[in-house]
Image 1: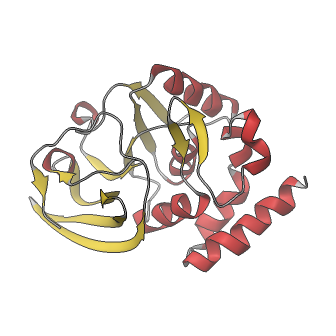
Image 2: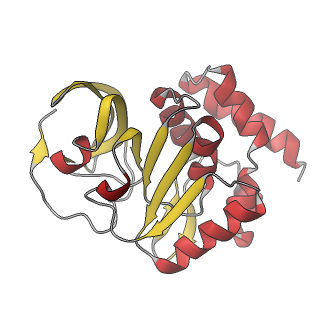
Length: 217
């Protein structure tokens, strides 16, 4: 397989058609090597339009969903970011390239360790991988300028929204199969939130989520 050609095809055939047109995001997809965060058994599928198994019932999101959420968060170099659900560490690496620091939470110790190794090998130094249940966020390191949730939620917990700074953005996929909606919520004032629907998709539920007081979209 010609890896660079496959990467180019992924960007041109999957990601651009999804209206991911931010040149900084597109450039980043060339720089952060997705194949290095993909399990060896699936490396030949690193650029395919599909979720890839990570073991333990977990999977990587499709490239276009990752890229779209990254674009919509509109990160700045001064941003402090929370990611809930680390997986292989690929999304954390993308976030870290555009932000000051990323705190990423993974409830499965084996996956958390895999992510640490992948990030270290990629030379990513501004990510802290925490092992624990991040379904209610990680308030001890907050507040955050951006939060991203890598598994679906039936509703958005108030506890997550309260960890956003004013001006902060949260990207999550909310709902139940067969219809889930990717949403971007912006904290426009103390306790005031504006929500925009981005696209429909279906992904696996977030590990460790239990029903909590929620924000109505």
